[in-house]
Amino acid sequence: MTDPETPGAASPPGEEPPADEEYARAYAAGFEEGIRSALREILLHSSRGHTAQELRMLAESRLARLSEEVDLKRKSLLAPPRRPAWGALLRPPPHTTTRAWVAPVGGTLPPVRVAAGVSVLVREERPAKALELLRGNAGLFPRVVVVSLHPPELPGVPANRRIDIAPRQEGPAEGGPSRLRLSELGGRLREPTEAAGGALVYVDSLEYFVSEEGAETTVRFAHWLVGQVQTTHSSLLVSLDTRALDTKDASRLERAFPQVV
Image 1 (cartoon, helix red, strand yellow):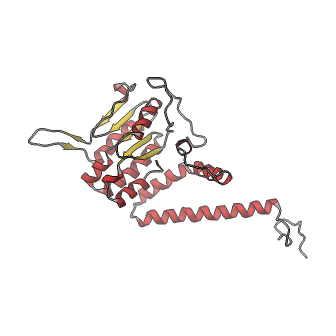
Image 2 (cartoon, one colour):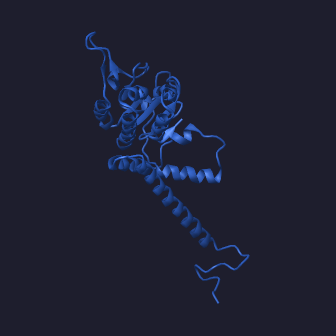
Image 3 (cartoon, helix red, strand yellow):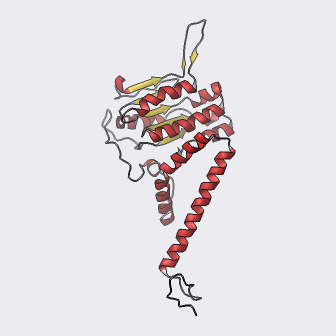
């Protein structure tokens, strides 16, 4: 007859299993579900035609924020939140060194603190919330990069800390406007993001690039940019009007971002 006190032995009917056995069962179940979830995600990305380099970038981005996702899951199980909060989504992950806050003009605190390595897509008809985040957090970074057809005003950000990149520039009448390719944009974003301290990158022209170079190229660029700010400890804010895009294209762009608000 099996001794019920023996480690690993089955508990008699009607009795609660020992605490260590219950812990082992819960751990094993969670471990299994985690592996299943990871494999499903790999299969999903593979079915979309991503290259090996893109799959690696997606995996590295997911690994970088895994601790935060686990912590959010634990807290949701203990006390399910009544509504999503920006602070919970955008707070820096554990063991991440955050920058000291530098007060912008007016001395008010930013609405949400955008941590290093974070990429946020804001769905809105006109740039508003994303601009609020940009202006509130510009003082946290040594440089700010603005990719916009209509560059916004950034009070308190001196010219030597601001880099404007125009997707389209008016040229001579006979030549017409000159257009910036996504491949060129990627090259111009490397230097400010890879410089010491990284950069806060703001983009409100993804719809323009979809119309110029197609959704497939723009989605691939979005995945690359999210990975770039992650590895360089920069941050990314994107304002996107999904009404201007096909539903499928808008959904694919949203999935490229770890945070969508």
